[in-house]
Length: 640
Figure 1 (cartoon, rainbow, N blue to C red):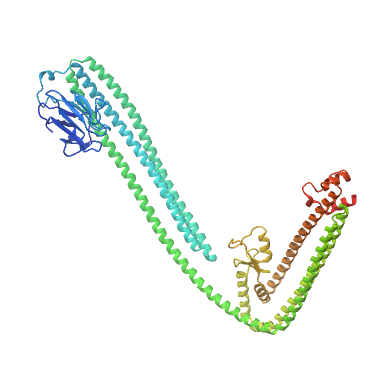
Figure 2: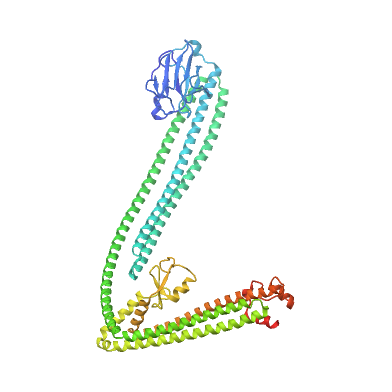
């Protein structure tokens, strides 16, 4: 850019970026000179902080110039903001800041080397020269400080990038671990419903999953350690830069003091000092630019090396993952194929077993038709016994009702008489219950005899045919036994069903087992559905008992022992339940009668009556009358 004689010049006080080097020196070429980002201005500054029509320089008269501010954020003249629409006269050496970031700072002056100035303007005052020198030295120091700050900022950015890269690697590791876990979880879920072979495959897959997760985790941890080392190195570099900054600041302060001393000593050679200072500033600026370029090249080289290393590691991991997925798919396909073959063989064996079972069922139907008449007679006898049992139970209930009526009628008697009557009635009820239990045992024994006779007949009928079949039938019986043990077992006791009971969810268990289970939980042991109903499966019990008779002697003996043990457990459970019910009933009746008798004697409670009559506390009333035992009640009555 060339300037016209008689016009001022705007000269930048700091080094501009390479793309703005043409704007280092802006000569004002007309009486009305405009600056801005718009293309219609005299000089265009393509920077986002510069407005389209930023400012206008106008010649007021032959010797004075003024600037008009049209910017959005305002320009500064010697550190004072002018404001949009405001105008101010300019003097030689005024410092003009065009925008807030400080990127474009110019000095308003005339160029003596380009055009002639009046003699009065050629001789500068001594103070003005000193101010100009001081200002340039101050600008040099500010430039050095900004350069050091930029180096520190770059080091901090590298540290931040390293931390972000570490976080990204950690995220990638977690994502890959979750992906592998989900893949293995899906494979395990697909194989969950199979038999022992599938369980073994599941264990193998889980071990491989754990090994692969461990290897991936180890690799990621190693990468994180390497990255941490790099971060530590960057931190060390940052500390060194901070130390270098402090040393440089001290050096600048020292140079400033030396310069001021030299300036005070040599006031006569100001122009030479100015040239020397400009040369020194230029050398410092060139050194700073060179050092900055070397530092940026080094940072870029390190960043590219880290990026290439991480990209290569990610590619290796992706390749390993792809190979592993392919191997897993091949193994899974082979496993599925083996399982399909085994399922096909199992289906064939199951069809053969069902065919043999169907033949045996037809044979059993023929035998049952021959034995139908005898079974009808047995059923009639059973109905008669059941009627007798029902009649005995109704008599017991009537006796219990009569007992309650008598107790209510005699509630007005003394507590001792009420207690004696209750005791006698309790003994009578126990005797009735014992009688009913004996009758029930008699009926059960008769039923067992009938069942044993039936089994004997069935064995006699099946004996000839079994003798003729030989080893092939024994093999079929063994297969049927294995099938029963796998399909007709209770999941609670792991035995063949005893008194099979089917729940509302269609799952079947032993009656005793599900009764004990319901004392702890009220849901199905298999599907965890709430137990809403249950019913006896007579067909299943009959089928199991008939098929057990065709099995080996050891199986029969074991089945008999289990049935006997289960009957004892059921009887013990029923006896405990009946005893608790009787105790609760007797306790409630006794408490009511004793309180009624005490009220008739003029006392509010039986405790007061007992304390008045016997001079002590009544035993068993500390936590309620329910805890009074029969022995304590007998002692109270005997004491009265």
